Amino acid sequence: MVILILTLVLALLAAIGAVIFAVGNPGIISVHFLSWSFDSSLTPLLLAAFALGLILGVLITIPASIRKSFTIAGNKRKTERLEKQIPPQPEP
Image (cartoon, rainbow, N blue to C red):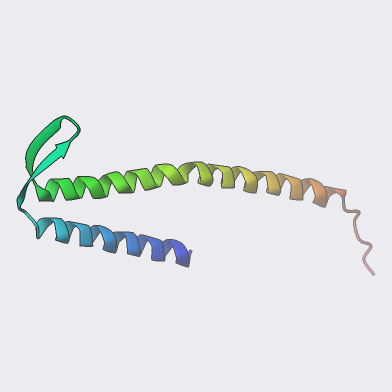
């Protein structure tokens, strides 16, 4: 639980830092990508890059989270099945 809270606090600080950095750099820049070329303010480009990185990070972690939850569920079923096989202990 502590790790989850720490992760959320760090993510919030990173988001706040990205917004402060983006708002502090409002200059107009030229973007050239393949055959596209356009002029834009740096602020929305920085925020879009941060959001894209956040989304990709979440999408990359989803399969591992699903796999982990299936493993935990399987281990719980196996534990319950094995506990049923243990003979009851006589009380003294």
